[in-house]
Length: 294
Image (cartoon, rainbow, N blue to C red; front, side, top):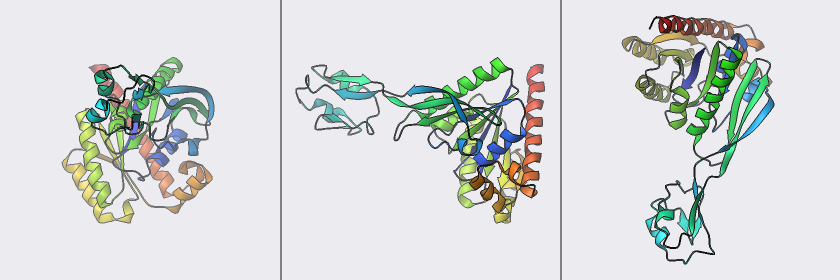
């Protein structure tokens, strides 16, 4: 069983569209949407929910007004300014617990609220494990770890070959939770200045966790000079550029129709995506051979 995570330094690079196409092309796999803050893989895969579970996030302070003497000490020590007029702002509260420790009458308790739900669903392309984090809720990294662990459990039980993760954008906590322990990271980049800047940052995160990297330049022909700059950077840093996918309105049309692009049309984009999956699967299988020799 090998685990692939598809990442991007910024949003909007085409990461989810590629993952949906991999869902169509790959055999004997399970799919995971690790972008729990703004999940959208389900829009293309149309899952039927089979199991729904609650997710309980981090702790939040609660003031018992019946016990509170309004001494003001909790408001003075809260560095997040989460307590005003002896009422806790759940969005501002970071759950550090200091207020509950210093309250002289034990009027403050730390409670763990329900922060969202996670699901095991069936799709036309196989099992999908995904989640929905509540509005303004935190601990998205904890939720990502939870659904990845359950994906591994299902994959081991059903003897699947691949876990394909649609990772979140950026370099924050949910990205780290998506990346740690994966066998391969496919970085999707578009040839813009902001894309290049964020691409360099996500490479640093991948290398910190010793996860092998492959790169896909999406919409490379939008700015071929920047695409060449990306390829030069990858060559200097010993990173394989696995695909250069051109811009095509067919991708947007496929999204509107709720289909992976490889099932919507047979054009240059589709051919490049198919070749990309072949390269990625060979890389994963090569790693399996190396791991067996260790």
